[in-house]
Length: 118
Ligand code: SF4
Ligand code: SF4
Image (cartoon, rainbow, N blue to C red; front, side):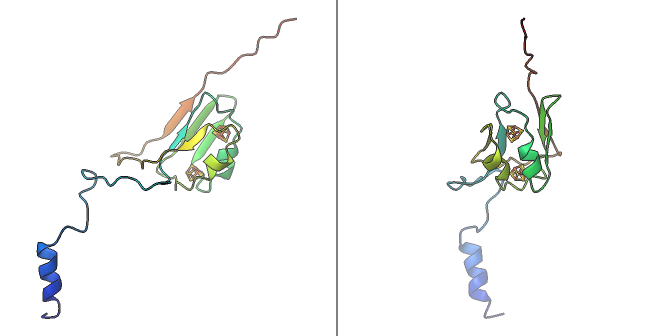
């Protein structure tokens, strides 16, 4: 007990070792791997990101021009961003904010119709 007394006193008067997250958010580190963002206007729906994703949280439907991601399953490894051939994927520096319910990121692009004139 006497051995622990200095530690107990130090903890009583010292600065808190933890933050009151999410009210007190620490700024992200440089090169932090945060939320995934897809610029759907330049995505070509090749499906490479879905094939490479280790947690299988991306689904791509080329015919319907849709791209979806389950951010709760994402491990923020960045493999999809590194392998995206069109450069439409990027990883923000900020981490995802806490949410009360699970949500999906669902993006749909306008299907471009080719006009063939003869
Ligand atoms: S790898 Fe890039 S271009 Fe291909 S489907 Fe994924 S986000 Fe779109
Ligand atoms: S960051 Fe990793 S886990 Fe998250 S979607 Fe991309 S490849 Fe999948």
